[in-house]
Length: 200
Image 1 (tube, rainbow, N blue to C red):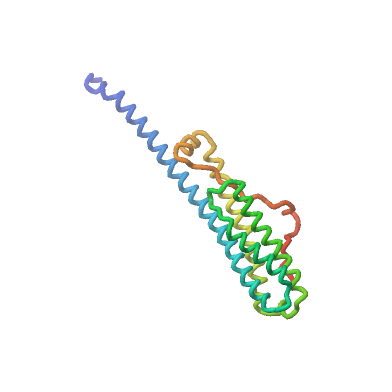
Image 2: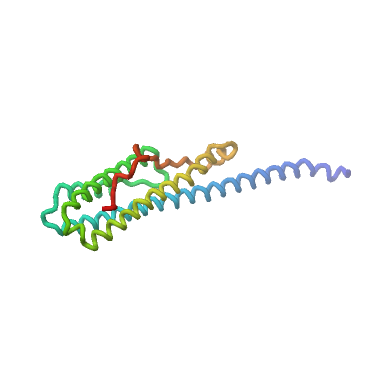
């Protein structure tokens, strides 16, 4: 081989290796961004369903208020739980503790909502209205959508979390600040029947 060309081989190999490393880093970074965006979008779906439930609860309270002798303590408990839910804000970057606080606030609203529904059973004039029946149907559907959205989020977050911890991708993840996402954990007793019964 000509001496003139030999002096270009070593730098060419180095440039080629650097180019391959650059392409790998770029490809890994881009795929992590896409995975993170899926997690964020999935988390937004969970928030949307919880917000839908909060709006329905407000409508339910207003419907039940139509009966002047309805238990004010029960209405206050639901209203307070609804207000507390509005103060607990999280996003897809929330820690496991923050997610747990959010879920606990949602569970308190579920509990007070169950009480409201149980008390409403003693008021046939409320229970028989079309508005009340429609809200019960919508709430039941929303509870189901919440469970599906939470499960979907966990299914998207799990491979993302595993990927950013696996070598060599974890090097890129740490370099560019990709962090793990907290899961929605099953509530104690989740294997039992739901506490909110909309079938009445």
